[in-house]
Picture (cartoon, each protein chain N blue to C red):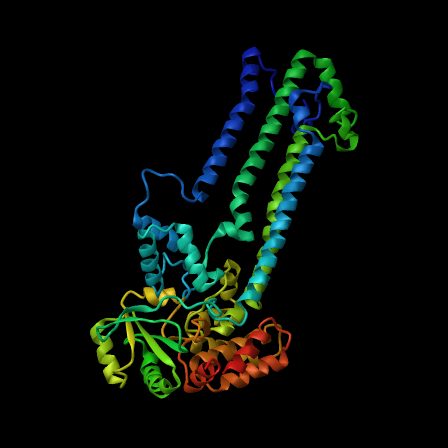
Length: 324
Length: 199
């Protein structure tokens, strides 16, 4: 890196650089936070239509796959918007209306990213990452500025410092020599640490969410309800990507979309051969048959319970069998 | 000047400057650690919440089961006004003239209303997202002319009962507490069992 020693004016410009970087960091932070802020004071008070739309966007359409009540054209979503509008017009707050739906449809009806762990991480990741990156750059700039300044004042001493490296620096005093990293390297370490702190839970939770959607959390929900409508758990994006290749996942999506016949055709071969996805295949087959009114459903579901008594959905299916 | 050294900030003066005092390695590592801890705690919370939620949802198609029934009143298809009050075991059925399965189910509901009435069981239906005229025609066609049907043109009454589709059926006990919920068609056995449990 070839840097010419700056003149007095250039040095002054360099000294202002951290402040400029800080300003940029602030702007980036505000810009990333703005869209996520609910109830931002806009121009005037929002219209009833806007507020209805806001409430509907926070509610899941119970008969759809991955659609909010604001986006869906299904009858129940239309009725939900109509009811939300009526309550807002009566002077209830958006939170009150959402809570009203929650008591009637359960916690799964709420699509609130800030209330869920994964949503919180996703929400916080952009500003944290932006801060870390800008902080790292600011650190590097400051280091360079100091170096240039020191060199300018006392070239001999600065050269000596460069030769011996950081190990013999007093560093952070009480922090001790082992932790006395130079600031530039520190910025890199901080960036990586913060990045890892955000990325690792995301990856872990993403993987878990996949499993849960495939076997545990989604299946019991459907076990209690007919496939004609699915008060379902969150449709994770990983399920969507699996759906293209995994016939059981695809059948499951079909079942939830109210197409049990197609689901049954797809899942029947998988339910016959041994494999890791056989339990779920058998469960989906049984539920599809049940949705179609096929009397074979009872036998299929009973076979599922007998063969996989410890499956996450087994208790649910037992109750279902006992009820019918 | 050495490029690699420049990048990693070697060659600093021995002087401790204001920013060096601020950016202490331990402090920074501590902050990173706290951030990591929050992330992990949040992750555990999320996983716990997820499993706890599963447990709470288990076995109940509707979160209203075990709770007091929402209000059930309004103009009827026949043109009168109706207001339901607790005091009798009540079957609440949601239907519409455009709903296919309801063609099979509604005659059964009407029959059940007639046969169970001597035991003090009430049957109240909600005609949801439907026009008055098609609803009347439909009731006449399936032989359920005398069935009590509250007209719910925009589906708001059905939504207040947490209904997701049509048909759906609830059983409410004499104290007004919702005891059973079924999404989709019911059969005679389900009605007899669920109602029998609370009479």
